[in-house]
Length: 290
Image (cartoon, rainbow, N blue to C red; front, top):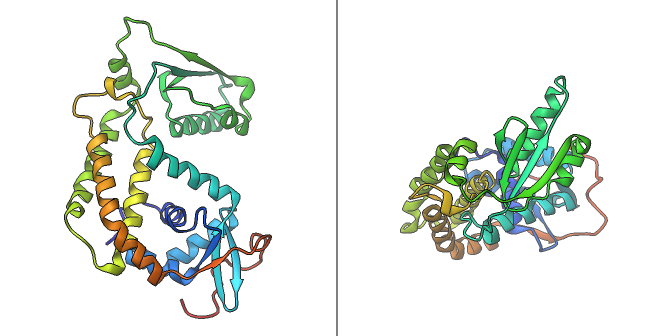
């Protein structure tokens, strides 16, 4: 089983930690991570480099136990993983509960602020906004962007409103003009083609954990790019619902085997409070062989 080219090792690592560590107050041995990632097609050096970078970015903590190095979550990574868990299991890919509210965000930046403009647009896209006009962006529902704007230092240059469309407004046409629906639909369709065979097949026992890991990481990568547009205004046959059905079916089918594999393959230890985050070292420092 190999990962898709677009699936970065850090995305896979966060998914792995969300699946096995989040909410459990444990750390996982780096050798266990290397073993599971190898089964997902990620080499040992790439896995070790990912662990090192994530420690340096404050996304992982280290904890040494004898000659072995274990890795756990920081508050920052726990927040990221909590958001991912909500997107997968609670928010979902299909927006049937939209109440007609839109969030409008207008901004006016000096012409020379090219970097700030790029950063704002990137963050807005990540938060589900699309460009209604050049300096006016829109997202379905009530989206709180105060922290995002403040972090970019642009609060004085941004105005945010809640609005409802006029009764004569063609919302479906507006959506198609504002968001790249064909690109989003293609992601869902590719996901279904890739994973539908596993609705009826089963992997080798020790590969189930890594397979389920790749499944979750790919699905989260799609739903995080989905602005959750109201389904009643999307084109007929919108592929999000069948894709979500495939995800849940395959996940449930793999879970018993994956849980058995995790018990065999993962070395976990309890978190020692107050230790690990400030430890020196290169982040992959096993003295023994993984």
